[in-house]
Length: 113
Length: 114
Image 1: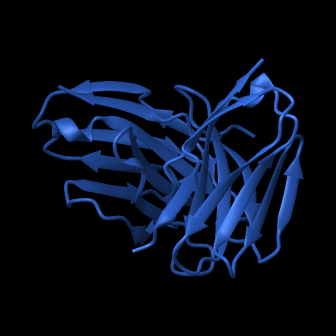
Image 2: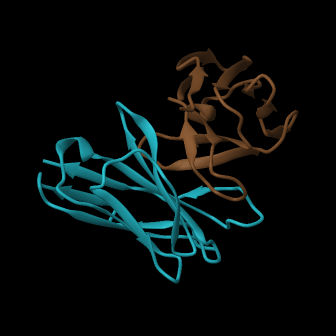
């Protein structure tokens, strides 16, 4: 089975711009979660989607949003980028019903200049 | 607010020695996870602990969970250089069932020296 894939892997944006990151979960997985990893704040939960519905949300401003499509692929969007948004963005997928394992993708490294 | 504390945050050990990483958390939780992260890489799942008294072992690593004490441990036996990495514990505080909302500890940077 192919693992979790994330695109793009690296991204450089300018303050004020917006960005969209994509995550394709493992085939058959219906839950997709997003996390932000920074040296200062560590790993922080952004949101989790299951069957196109947001089930959980972390403490991030409204500039951070996401969605999930009917094929379980998910996107997250960050608008009006700030320097502090520079981070590794990780998505994780889970089967969501009988297994509690979460499998992480390779991440998207976002740099905001 | 859920707090997850790992200690130590830095651990330098010699090959062949044993050591334990501790993970304390502040509220009731259904699930506890251990992950490994190599530099510049993503998270690799090590263990998922689902109930009080759960113990899982894989190679030189053994994890246990005491939900009453709100404590999990990751024990390293006869460390080898390949175990050098950052280890994270994470607690699931999702709203129940199969929801996923992990709160991570700050990680333990483990360096195994020859």
